[in-house]
Length: 267
Length: 267
Image 1 (cartoon, one colour):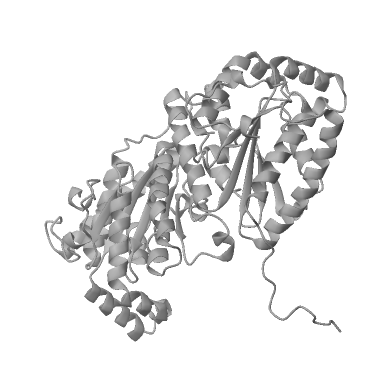
Image 2: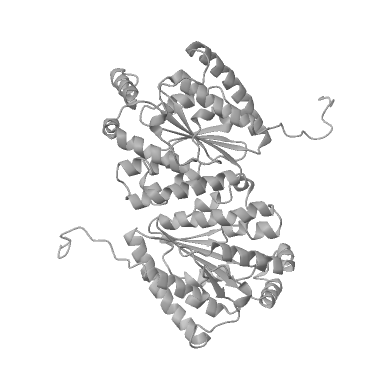
């Protein structure tokens, strides 16, 4: 998955990533679905280890344009993983209560504790992307937030968080189809907002804002992965694979039981 | 009060500050008590402005060795200021719940909102002072926290917090007298803990840890003030003066009322 990991070389171009790419998977959709199922079984086990050992903490940040597939990714990748140790936190428009403090306040509250996996569905990156595109804060303010975010994530990872950031990358035409489907399907219509069309009209601005944000905040300790996401099966496989391989790299073990338990008979 | 403000010149020595100094006040204890009362009246007014305008936020961090006078400073300086807009947050030994996250998690939760004054009685500085002296984390861990803290405070102040940090500086002999008084006075005995004596035995280690922490984290945006604190009257006057002059420097104004209210008769 190295090819989707954004290097900190100051040359990140979103346009170099093809939303239709499926080249990392050797096989077609059916095989990918099978392998994603296998990855999920490994994830179930890894989450149990993480929870039992209470040493590591995993934070997954998901960002995408509207209809980019954040909700679907969470549903598929974490399907069947014990919800006791997994928490999804969705960040919508900030409330007045949240806006009265710094923009990292509401996200910091929800970082994972030892033994926990937390998924941010949207995050502090909205404060350098949406806030910029919508002109909610002046350039001077959003520009200096890159540094805040780098340093915030440095602190989190120094203090034991494993941090993975995914940008689910879809094309403009794919978004058109997905938004149309939401409008046409009565069971999906609830997800549609008129403001989605306003955001769509600023497609290029959002792409530029994401490009800058990803380039400015991809670090060795908190890398971004740009996942080709026009095909759901590929996106789910790729995200699962990065998460599973990262957790496997932690070398987790079950904690030592109390001494003298082996052979003990319960009466 | 410039003389107590720690400059970011890399040459900070705690031993250069005399805990008995009272040289910034021209007069004796009686006059200082009167002037502190006048400062308090100005603070009452400034806090009301801050609350009405809901633009600024003030965070005051108080650190000191045991019996250094943190509680007394809060009680005297903020006496009579409307508690609706002033919150004191005391940070004791971290709980298991807090230790499961990064050390900034519990303090970030309590930063002031617009219009609020928050006072931290102890703070994240315990995590580079007490944690170091007691050996709770290895040197590698506490050393990198200086940067975390500088950047955390940069973010807070970039995002609108006015941040004042005070180290209440008492001498070792003054601490001895105060701890003895706590032991001897039945109404003060509840404040005494045996662990205060263990900490006292490591006096030099604490002074060294404070010296490093203050030197490493005194910045233009979040300066430390080392306040001579052997005499309570002087300490209270000095802290009041710094806070009042800082708030006056914000140039606050009451918000504009709705139009057409002047002359309106209530029937």
